[in-house]
Image 1: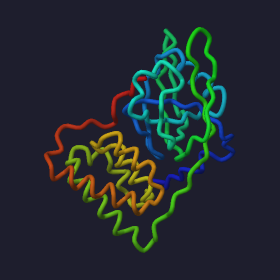
Image 2 (image 1 turned 180 degrees about the horizontal axis):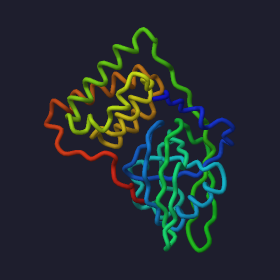
Image 3 (image 1 turned 180 degrees about the vertical axis):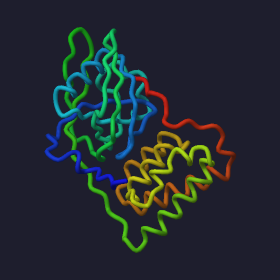
Image 4 (image 1 turned 60 degrees about the vertical axis):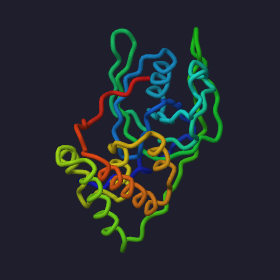
Length: 232
């Protein structure tokens, strides 16, 4: 397995990207995210992305978003994951199934609304890509072992089998942490904190502790991976 470089896929990034805000989905670099897109404004967003750089930034809505959801002003967390559309299917009624691969963390610095005929437009953000603070190579092996052991305790053998490739040592520690953080049974707010943490060592320690506590609180239970399509 080749090591995934989350920045390589965004060479030449324009800095402008459609924003797809959801209340319970946090995307991460290196993660494949299936989406079912049915709202008119987000169909238009997908069409715009496909005609351009094929990029969409997934954003988590902040608490209090409910009364503003039908507008382009619902509050979002400014740290997002910029993803590339790897596959798309347009259904007969205009809905889309798309699969995004997370490419990089980013921070939304400003927004505008892209008009959509007959309704609310979709959001387009100016996004600065964020760089991580890498882990000291001497510590990587220890961090990896701690994280994998915590994930095994949290997930159980069934889900671990679905991740046998990502547990491979040739996958970078950063990507390993992000993929396991996405898959873990953790609140969206906690996953957002992991997304916002740019220091890989601190992110790994935090996730390892969270997984260990979650594993100690109860049995892993039945978990499905890959997850079902997220709905907008």
